[in-house]
Length: 435
Image 1: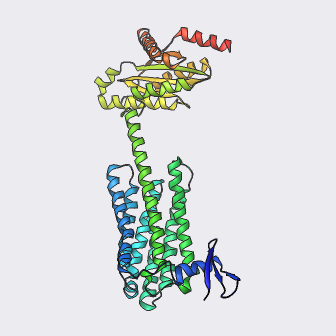
Image 2 (image 1 turned 90 degrees about the vertical axis):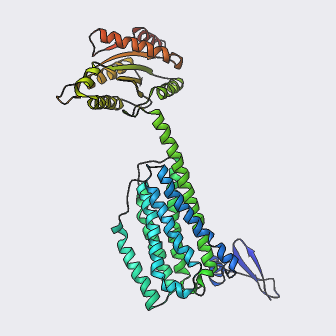
Image 3 (image 1 turned 120 degrees about the vertical axis):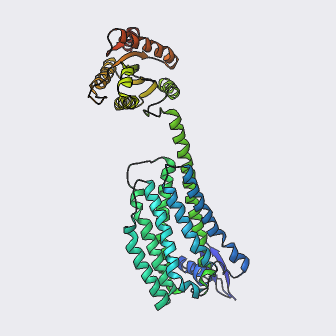
């Protein structure tokens, strides 16, 4: 009898009584492993029931994604992904207990569950990246596939054609959302890039699987298909891909939720600007890391703001604060910071190349606030400013006190003006002269 060895992924068969070896092509090897004999024929009952781990895992992951969406309200795509996993778990669990005759009778129903499951996954990914996958896009695919399933199960029982049609349809549906995944714009951090890449791998795997079915179409194990090595191989790879994608998505969403919670802690809920604590934290970091240029601290307070609240109500007062915050945001560049310090008082930390640039920016903010209309009768409000140059993070607290004193000096001098701290301006001019 002949003896066999394995070398570099290829089967090598030694001819009996000789030292000659016959090399077998890799495609022939795959055919031998997964089609003719399979890695193992699943005949024993314990192994058969062990296969239920795969659909049960999908079911748990799907329910987990749906449940997690209740915590992460800003991630509606989790419902779609969870529903897709649940829909895929249903036919996988049922098919493991069925013979070919029952599989043939229920082919159209199982095909519907598979198509619906992968449609939900594709739509969830599309929603995450700002797109969508309308039902009417995939409705023709559903109709054609279900009609062919009926034909190749009722009129002509052909398992190979059913597998080919279903795998091609799944690959098509997944490909429809790939345009949103590869579209420029949006988030492109490390985790998000990993999700994009994983989804494209999933799309590629779907097409490869369809190609494998086509290549081995004439020799698929149609007898006891759900107990064949091919079925075990497909289930195993499918579970690994699904597990990886679900856990990656859950980890990414968890990271985004933590990031959003931190952002909410750092932001004023009315204006969206930094709050006092976050401003001090980030301002010290900016000043410590700065090497060149000038940092200007600006304190701004709206003039007669109490009159706006008393005359027009707090709703108009809130809109006024939001408009002022929008003016400040429009003037932010690079590492600049803006914060609501409390009430109608705002802070800005601007990085400027020259003192002249700093003066122009602060004065432009003052004029833009004065030109805006805040009240229903078209009236506006003005703002008074105190500004000081900051040279180090240790000077931040004193600089705020100095700018605040200059602010009230501007109010006493008639309001709607900017008061600069001349000592720090002279100090900056002297530093530039030394450089």
